[in-house]
Length: 73
Image (cartoon, rainbow, N blue to C red):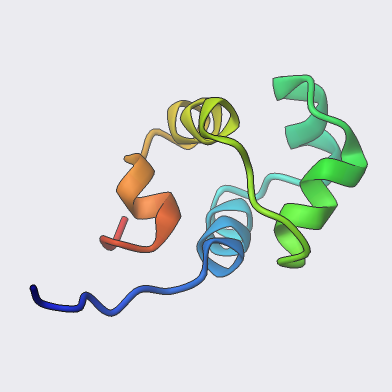
């Protein structure tokens, strides 16, 4: 099996937020996540659960693979 070069979730997440000019506060409010949770994802402290990942992908209109770093968005 080929190993795919991936980028950590938090780097893709931060890039999407910057590209879309979305603050951590705004994202937390829009998706009803705590600000602490969003900050933890942003800084790579933790990663979202699958259900949260789906909400994030829908919000940014990208695939889960893109958020997970498996494909470019």
